[in-house]
Amino acid sequence: MNFPFYIARRYTISFSKSTAINIITGIAMVGIIVSAMALFVVLSVFSGLREFSLSFANDTDPDLKLSNIVGKSLVITPQQENQLKQSKNIALYSKTIEERVLFSFNGKQEVAFLKGVDSVFKKTTPFEKKIYAGEWLKPNTSQVVIGYSIANKLSMGLFDFNNVFEVFVPKPGKGTIENPNEAFNESPLTPIGIYAINDDLDRKYVFADLGLAQELLQYQPNQVTSVELKLKPSASEEDAIAELQTIFNNKVSVKTRAQLNDSLYKMLNTENIAVYLIFTLVIIVALFNLVGALIMMILDKKANLKTLFNLGAEIGHLRSIFLLQGSLLTCIGGIIGLALGVVFVILQKKFAMIMITPSMAYPIQFRVINVIIVLGTIAVLGLTASWIASSRVSKNLLE
Image (cartoon, rainbow, N blue to C red; front, top):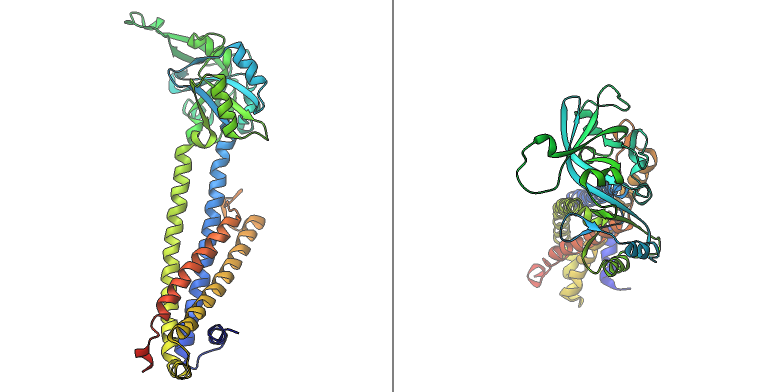
């Protein structure tokens, strides 16, 4: 057996004659355990929050969204539609129109996006699952589905036949407007459903039939602002994007769900990195105790080290003893802390011990990558701290 490892193991599992050294070593071990557990729990919490935040995007955004590079709208030819239907990568596609317009109800006004959708939309994007009250609109009608925040701001409910919910869309054209009444295309709408997701989305969209939106915007029957697509399970985003660019002659912009929520992904990644760095600093502070404990151990075992040196042990071997001892303490503490963190995450997922609201548990997610990150961080920092402490062993110390 390698004698530095043998001695390091003995020093690790046995108590020193000095009570102070035992206390310092114990504090260092507890610090490593707590910091490793805290880092894993926090990373798991942020994984849960990330999953929870992105679940909204999964329910409201398509796999791919196609729009024109130049201008607001694009015209889809029958040939292009046939190619989309015969695609090996695309399962479904939905033609949509988005335009910022003015809504009015009972003397109150609100500016939001009118989103015209066809009958396939609810299959490409599971928006229908977010209906808070009422039901989804029917094709070829004046029915609309509005956001909860819009309904709340306009003090509007469903099936209110005493007041008219109207939409005003600016007429396209050039020149000076002489008669304000002729400046807008307007139409009465019938609110039939209210969706609730989050405050930003709840105040953004009013969903209407595609034909109604085309009529208000004076679009052609095959003219839309975007096409939302659902991919087949076996299809890859790269292949689908390349196929779409071929179909539309590289004149369109195709964005993935991640690109549609670019700011959200950046925010989540930045927060995750910031929290990791903060708790890594906590581990570094905890490892200062380990450095102190190892230096105290070196001074306590000075006589033994001098004996080993006189028997022929090299300075490198003596340093290896405390390098290995610090590494063992770090690994043991990290594994115990990680095990406690895993237990906490499992208990939170199963029994919902911590709640955000009375009906909603704090989101948390067990991921193997978090285990690897914690073990890697503890191992690297522990090895560094042990190397710093073991470097105190020198000939001058033993003389």
